[in-house]
Length: 503
Image 1: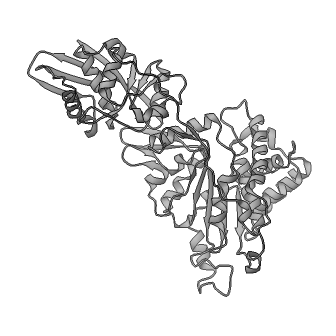
Image 2: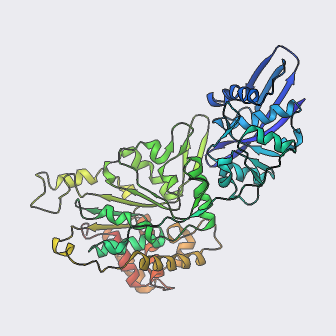
Image 3: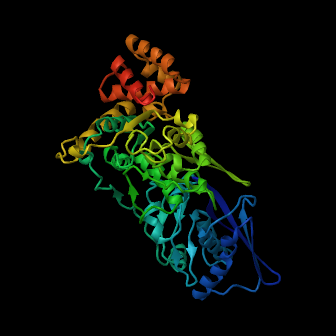
């Protein structure tokens, strides 16, 4: 008899169905596992054997063969333990084979038969729902997997509980979703003194999910401004929250099954490797750019990042997805993030201060910022200088707008964009608009078009730069509650595209 159980193997964010076939046949006693398993999967037979012994179930003196189909798909991870055990028990007629075949299972077994939590329960639940099967996972994963409404999630804490469920001795109840979390305690923009132009640029960037570059001397407040961006962004929509949580589930970052509605904020160190930033490594896991999906990626000291890492960002910024290429697979991860970068104007940091600048000025500035390639710099929609704040201003009371006030304007602007692009799946905000959609909704009035043409000729804007100015102007118009992109909107967008240091 050949018994069948089902589980999943992960190719990026996609969970592919894997059939676990178990045959118990006469012959010399053996326990073989085939189907391209990695080391962790190959060791599953020892964990399964020990767990069955703890339940006082002895394996027969026969030849046991387990096949993981499709055989050419790499199988990685310890979550194959539970489906292997269920397929074996079904082949031994301990549990009904038809009930096991109607379930997608994943979970790691301890030697005493208890189930250990594994990562990626949420993508596995999505795959089970598509196959119209139930999902069985460890108790610690149940709250996470239960966020998928279309699947019945069973979450035993041991293999014994799973067996009792299948034999009808103790039926498991469906797991319930975890809590929806809203991260509180964001730093308030009202605490920032001065830097009105930078705060305006951040508001525009947040409203349209535009990429932004800040250049300023050390201590001028670049990191402080970036840290307050999450406080002005609207919460994730339910669809975005599920999409983002699937990526975090693959990385094991979901806490007790709770889905976070706050937009992610990732700030990798400049010594991080390419695999850490873009994705890859063992198992081709998502990198920081994918963990920042639907949120913010803050890269402080941008020129200090390896040149190869910076240039690798160019395509994901344009396409909204990254392809991690490996010898046996090409894994795709979504990565629609808002890139906020910060840099000093030169290596010493005091390029604009003659009293404190080093002896290599102005060459040090060219050498330092020259580490950022022109094509990458061209992808920043907004570029803003962040000058140092005078000591006299630091003594003044904080009287700027609060994050809540700015967040309301940002939310209103995002709502206008959501209404505008509701029928277009690939476009959510103005930063995504291109082609005829951009021409339809961001074409300026006559005076605005004239100004944009003159600016393009004077400053040598590329075609990409021209379109990015239009997108930013469309966002400024949304903040202004204007249906038409007018000359003042174009002028402000150009001022952020070509800062005073370049003009």
